[in-house]
Image 1 (cartoon, rainbow, N blue to C red):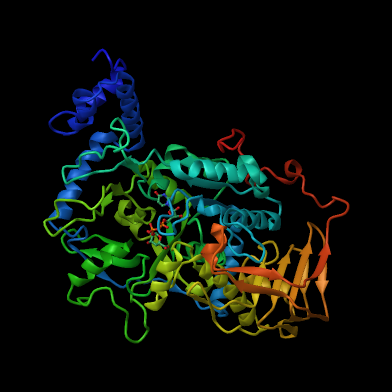
Image 2 (cartoon, rainbow, N blue to C red):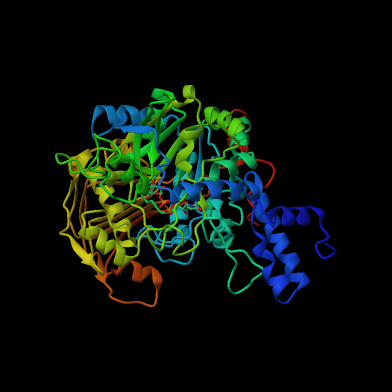
Length: 621
Ligand code: UGB
């Protein structure tokens, strides 16, 4: 007792070591080993931090863990009592009047959106050690994910009259905080104002658990340290609540909608106006972007769940590892997670964790629930007795579980918006070897090479649907990953931020021809492409306020070629399996000479428009 002098720490340690909570093994190193007082104090301060980082503290964590681990051992279906059916939602096909009208409605709302990037994940499946948001989205321009997200936000800001500042919150974890801050610092926040960026940090994670009694895992290298693991992306809601972020956005910045998005989806924002339009039309508090889902694909399925005994109903994501047992327990879907024979897809729309919230409704729910999402546990057992884990487990929570904390009335305001994945979803989550295996099964690879080629593909789809003549290249493969390499088209969000922009940017689409070996890069809101015959590489770059019209332009040069690379010292090249050989380029540029088009933030923001927050919550120095 004399050693741990801090009352709070001592009380916590005593509570944890009580028979009820059963963590007395934490003191083994001290009592049976070197009795190092300083190290013991270190352990106590770690415990105190962990206690503060979990809603309800470590007592609540252990109690919940014991219950969930027991249920898991007893094979209790967490969705027992809920029967699934296929939910109703809005599906959209590009090029239809419904798509155009809904997108148009959403465009009007873009200048009232707050952006929330969840970027605390370790990227274990990708096998990449740095922060994933620092990876290139594609290698034609080398734009990084965070840079792309920032450029989209700035594009939206620039087109608003009066000009606005839109906030971006980034959730980081212990593992991603430093690299994220470094990335922002080195790149001057990619053009965003420092104060419009809010960094919220997941706690130090939660204690890893070694057995069904929820004993904390002790670090084999340091017996005075508990192993921790991230608690999952569901932390975002409690962090936004705790840091009063969304309250401030609503009250001070006039933000109406908020979009939550993942770290590495280069197609993330193509359908944002569409989602906003749907949310507005239906008065949705929460709207999930969905894609047709391949059975067993590692994305959750949105299902309508009905509880026979309580009469409750909710439309919610059922995570990929829970979908199979849930479906098998029913008569209607007893085959489990399989594709519908006619469509070739799972009947349940795939959740891609791109979520739009209506802020007023969202904040009311946060006030009531403090943003705490339900926990789940997913231990990997050594054998059928389910008594020994292969490796320590932990409680986790997911951001898409939001509908589970809604009242019956609020639950009516939850929906989804489905679009083809080719225009809105291609994350980079998997290592090459896993991607190869996934492709062999007919499932998207989710690798760096596909993430890149899918971005070009999306732009080709948009341009073709608008009426341009774009010839598709033949598929090729890089390190075993099959992709369609081109033409490689990169349209900066300032130029085109959604398909609806193409009408003004490509006013005569029938006069635009792009061959399969071409590369087209366009930057700048002042560019218009009237007539172009491209067979090679063209880079068009108009600085702020500059106008460029491409008319009767014929480009024929050696262009940029993707060259397969089987090995490289550079990790990002190894991940992709190719580099770009920039053989010949035609540039059309107009850079801001006078500077007169630079926007003066202070004078262009009116009273009713969102404004930058005064206090610096960004943590970026
Ligand atoms: N993330 C955090 O910020 N903190 C964490 O503690 C963990 C993650 P994963 P997952 O669209 O492909 C999700 O690991 O969890 C961030 C959905 O649950 O990449 O396996 C992390 O940085 C699933 O329904 O994905 O699966 C990243 O940005 C489906 O939508 C994001 O959270 C699937 O993504 C997702 O983390 C998908």
